[in-house]
Length: 156
Length: 370
Image (cartoon, rainbow over all chains, first blue to last red; front, side):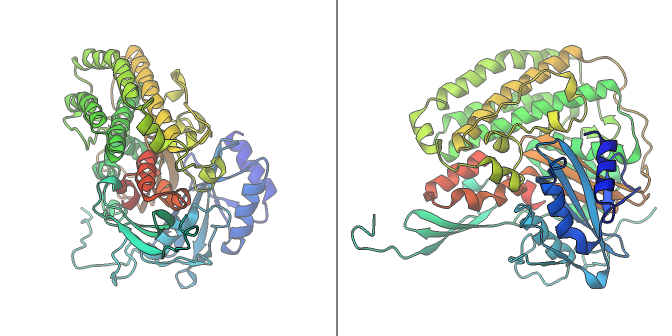
């Protein structure tokens, strides 16, 4: 499927769920509501023309105003890929685990929890991961994170 | 067996690593053992965490290239490539023809170099010392070629957004041709040492079988995936750069055990050599880098870009807000998911097989920990 076809297929099929984002540069980015995550993920995996059986990556983003969680998925069978994201408010930073759909999501979600403090429901193993076991300095990938030896580059 | 004698083995916990030669970096496993049989595996990672993603948020795009070198230092070229591709998409940069060829030559040579490390360390882990020396002998030739081109042997900072940093010197192509002419016979030598070796086969055949559906569910990529019979190579299936112009095979095997992963990687080295040969024959003259402003600011937007490196899918997610520094850079390495599937592969095997499986998956830790 060509990219244009893919985009229009997804827009038609999930018209109540997805919005196409303008921000994708040469890539397809959709936005979905956090509560649709599980249903949507399962639907794109089980849909025959999409068959997104491959979870490349889950990236968290802190924009300074809110969290974003970007899922990059692909299909081994159909040779296609696209990305979709959730937008989360700071005070409602929680998502559902997609491990039942893609077991490989486990560590990506653990990373989200550890580095951003986004809570992952039904994950089952949210424990210290990349950071030291006795880490108590918060979530380092948040934009407001600060530490004595962390210096931002000057603007000029 | 113990039951037959009316004896029971008490389950116990065994710690492997972090400083264990077979963990290729610093990785720790907490194993539950019943006698010599593994009943559960918990990988403990983070010993090499250098906060690269956080550092990237505080650097300009050009300053990030040397940081990506450290992300996966066995194939630093493809790290440069992945990040440059993503940045080019984001900023809409063109890449001159000659630069594309130079990139492919370097990427494939780097893939061979990385597979040679794997070849050497795998056999070392399994107790054979000679292949290690063989592998590092040829790798040395490749590193010399890199040094000739960009002055570096491990962290190249060579592929940049919009092209490459330096052209190859005149002496490069003869040296490279000489290397390629000799290389096929060298791979034959490697195969003569291991492929038919009864000890090697006994250690690897039917050990750590990765089923294709498990591999896909865990997003295991690269040679480890192709050894399970899934013909999925991003150079072909999600094409980037100019890979569509070359004629090469994508080796696959059916069984998905350690031995198949070995065969796939050996064959891949031959295929990479084939690509390099075609590229040095076709390479045109011309500029090597398009005009890129210092501290350029890509327009606001986001991109996820992936390349096939020697360990599988290497992806870069970049989000820009139109500043000279990215808002977010996420790095996804092949080893991350390969290590994640280790517990599935190891349960039921003997402890010595853990080493064989780890070696055959070609996991290195900087890739996982970032």
